[in-house]
Image (cartoon, rainbow, N blue to C red):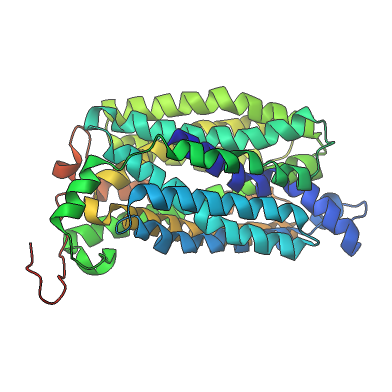
Length: 419
């Protein structure tokens, strides 16, 4: 699972890591690159254009919802492998983009597959493990995604700016070739096999229609948290490269050093998140981490290289503490028969939050002539969402069969007995 997460992270983060190169290259083509004080004059393309493009790419991740739901019907492993392979192939194709909006379109097509692969990998990690090991396993998958994302930045930094965005995207061919090898080591979780045998012949579950009131309440609360978190992490993570290199004028080697430092910081975040989830509980750990994400994201864009470095590393620490805890809760709150579909739905709703955040952040940056106030605006909903964890049950120490107490209401096909 960690290998698939690395491949997914490498493919998805390429568009963000190379955004400064993309903006400069296509800004020169359109004649927008000049010298001045506006975002467009400094970065190559306007904050609105960059925000809309990134929003379109994120919005395309809504396609992960039906793809992830297929894993509840067709099996975890085949959906995982094919989604990852198709997504990476489209990233490689993005190296041939002749213009900014073609680049946006190709990466938009890759996002549903890579997002679905990452969501299902989290589900499989949770289903393969017991309560004592679940947070650790999910954290390992999250670490894999972070390693894949950091590799993109490290490759660019090691080349000292000599590797353009086209070469960066073409490197996705390496993890693509490794996907079949990873597939040989994968097996369907026993929990999924048992659930499939027990419900053989039933219709594919629809999460909203087949959960009871308690299940819907849990899902609605998790959706609200996912939207609020993505509203700040979407623009905070996506604009940091173009802000550092295009506005603060730091070199790619400096941003690469930031992401090299982010590797041990991210590992520390994973360890803190896992320790807190197993020691204090899922809910308080997730709430504290989400508050940390909001505060550090706002700091990143307050001007000055030191603020950007400290803020971005603090965001990595909080983000990597938050992600595995939220993923563990997503596994523990919903039954096996709809677990992958619920994960896909949370990804899709998080996409809507990220899209709204990207558009708002870019537009505010253009209107206000900078990123500082925009960062405070997108951080506010995440701070408010920390209170929502009080509405969810604490799942620490419970096996999946105990924590997902809300039943699935199955509609059998005509002629089959209900279970």
